[in-house]
Amino acid sequence: MESRAIRLESEHDIVVARGEVRAMAVALGFSLIDQTRLATVASELARNIVKYAGRGRVIAQAAEHADGRTGMRLIFEDSGGGIPNIEAAMRDGFTTGRGLGQGLPGSRRLAHEFQIESSPERGTRVTVVRWR
Image 1 (cartoon, one colour):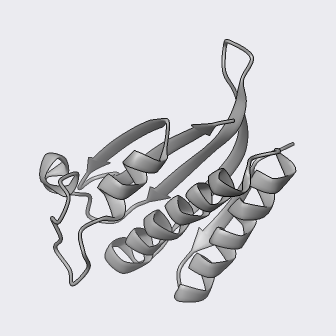
Image 2 (image 1 turned 90 degrees about the vertical axis):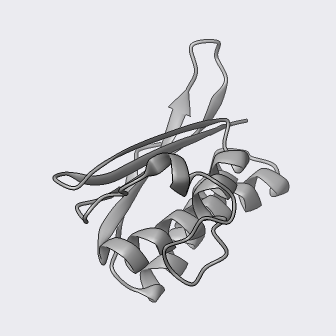
């Protein structure tokens, strides 16, 4: 299965991304609970891009672990102004908007692997992996 890039510029794109990630999770054989986890991560992180950066993309792809497990990798990228304080942003309840402050820390809890890179010059890239 090849990777799929989905542009993120509007609320509609968030819904599309959530549906595409769920469909890929089904095709990869994830359980219903894990399909929901992946769709939730897609929705939360896509919303962050649209809300804070204005535009970006998510790349959804099948992943294979060295031990033979299969999974899904989601890469969220934008070229916005970056996250000034990643440590603070990863704390439950921290928000610079009107949200609940659960997007990044909640997504980290739903993934087996979570990596975030951010700078004002390059924007933000969040990579999450969920293994089957």
